[in-house]
Amino acid sequence: MRIELSVILRLSDAEPYVARLVKGLAQMGRTLDAKHGGVAGRFEILAMDERSRDNTLSVLSLLSNRIPELQSFQDVPRGTAIMRASRLAQGRAWLILEHDADLELARWAVHEVLAGHKAATVAGELLAVEREFAAANLGWMRGGLLTAQREVRKGLARRGERPLRHPMPAQGILARARRWARTPLARLGLVRVNRRLGPG
Image (cartoon, rainbow, N blue to C red; front, top):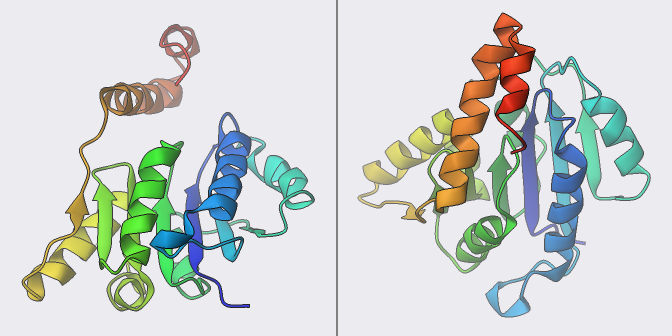
């Protein structure tokens, strides 16, 4: 059976949201609208764990018993998840994420690529890209989502094209600010301040 969609998850310390995200992506994969080239269950989720220090891998292990399309890979060196996944992904469209995401925006991006566009993106949030173009531009790339978005923009610019862009909703901007604030605080051990930021 041909795989239409490969979801590539670059994960690190994703325990708080990974179960919700993977379940949502699996549901999205099963229900994409056929008129946009929907996948009707023909999808895969490649969860690339870049050496998480929390229970991300344990959660993925539990999920794999319920979601047969999920494959998880552990102990992936930092900055290599997308490069490694590009050698495994079989889908006609790739959706690349590295943190919790708005699944309606993910659905929009995947629909656009399955409808024939080379790439669709929400800055800093997600990237959907056509397989052959992605393999050519991301196959040897080190880095994360922002690097991948930049490489796709450069690759399209060489062809005189641009990716489709969707503006980030206001709640997405707030969520990104919270994620950005948490990372340095956690490294400094300021857990009490970190908790005051609330969920997101």
